[in-house]
Amino acid sequence: MAQDMTLLGLESSCDDTAAAVVRRNGDGSGTILSNVVLGQADLHAAFGGVVPEIAARAHAEKIDIAVERALADAQTSLRDIDAIAVTAGPGLIGGVLAGVMCAKGISAATGLPLVGVNHLAGHALTPRLTDALPYPYLMLLVSGGHCQFLWVEGADTFTRLGGTIDDAPGEAFDKVARLLGLPQPGGPHIEKEAATGTPSIPLPRPLLDRPGCDMSFSGLKTAVLRARDTVVADHGGLPRARRADLCASFQLAVGDVLAEKSRRAIAETRAPAFALAGGVAANAPLRAALADVAADAGAAFLAPPLRLCTDNAAMIAWAGAELFAKGHRDDLTLAARPRWPLDRSAAPMLGSGKRGAKA
Ligand code: KG4
Ligand code: ZN
Image (cartoon, rainbow, N blue to C red; front, side):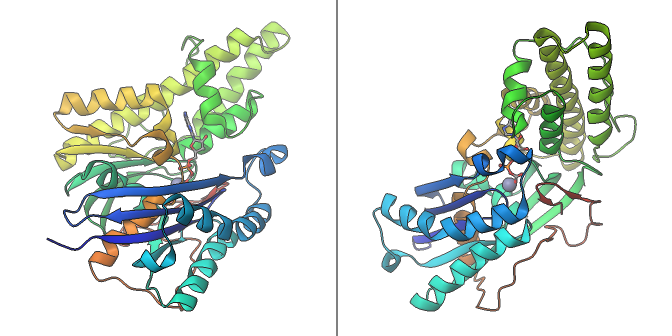
């Protein structure tokens, strides 16, 4: 049996400054000893989206505070840490740099080994931290900057089966929220509104007519804009009830696309287990729709608890622990990377979302 190891994890690739202490137990299971997330939503609220320069400065100001709190919450000190894991990309480069510089500083001062972690690998390996899920499994990563199906065979062995060719679903939730006058980040607000509406407004299901697992959400957002304009023209404004209907219709359309593409991805891989990650996985109706797809296909279904769906450093510490256990080490030459595809053999995805580079 392998030895226990305890990692400090740092995450700063978007708008959450996070640090966590996680133990990888000798039997391969994980224990979260602390998980500190300092959000920046209030700093960006007035701008309707994440402003990279503001995010970078806030990360630089807060990352050491997050580390101190994570160590204190875990009732531990750097002396008890075996290695430092840090998100080295993909993401907003100023933020990633803040985390990497902090991790390098701690490593240089203490001599602790450094492990650079791909943010997407952090999300993708979360079901192993929460449920000790064995390899291989199928992962649907749906967040503000990312949307892809990954066949996960090891801590650094990922095959991308398909993904969005334009906006990520979280980005679409955020943009639709903006169109409807709802606050940012839009996902939770749309979910709340949708609960009181009916999905009565016809919207497209983009790319369902094409084979494969690629998705598109940009046209759906434009369709919501047109539907909103029709409602406004008919009613001389956007009545609350119609806004709820638009939210319900949009959420159902996203769910239908994700469900059908998931059905295909599970069939293609004959996946024994289907897991979700990323901020959009926090959406209860979407989770329920995808759980049904997995059940129909006879695959186990796993979705992390909400606080581990959205960005956090526990997932980075865990991914770092898996890599560290396999002998991965970085040094002070570790680079911050705005783009870093998990599956190096797959063609790069198009475009770069508001909330960081797609991969
Ligand atoms: O994984 P995450 O925290 O950050 C990225 O790496 O992007 O995901 C944030 C995204 C935002 O776009 C947010 O609107 C979306 O996840 N989100 C949701 C919900 N909660 C967060 N989308 C739909 N429904 C939700 N309940
Ligand atoms: Zn993320």
